[in-house]
Length: 147
Image (tube, one colour):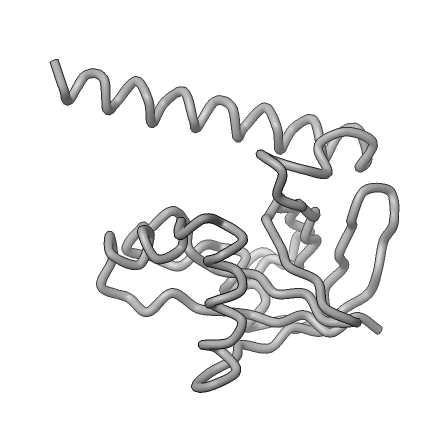
């Protein structure tokens, strides 16, 4: 019974996030700017393999002209597709609500990674630390610099 409840909960969360992403992307940023009081953006990347434009809705933290993203994929053993896209093609577009910005991505390490990680984990109420416990990979932290 516990497993069934767990599966139902995961499925419900998946459906909710799918609906939220769909609403945010297809309303062109009119609806869905926040998810559970956390700011969300639409990341436009070029596919690493296909070179087709991809869109992902992600929680973010903005400080000055920098935006932090965590490639957690919910603690999955693999990095998300958008991470691979940004590693191959650092140029991307970021949409926050109805506003769009050009940006360049870079992965951060060492002290800078720790600083951004702690801020993002605090904003996400320890969610990223929980995801890190679910996987052996070190979850990447990326910073986008707005042009």
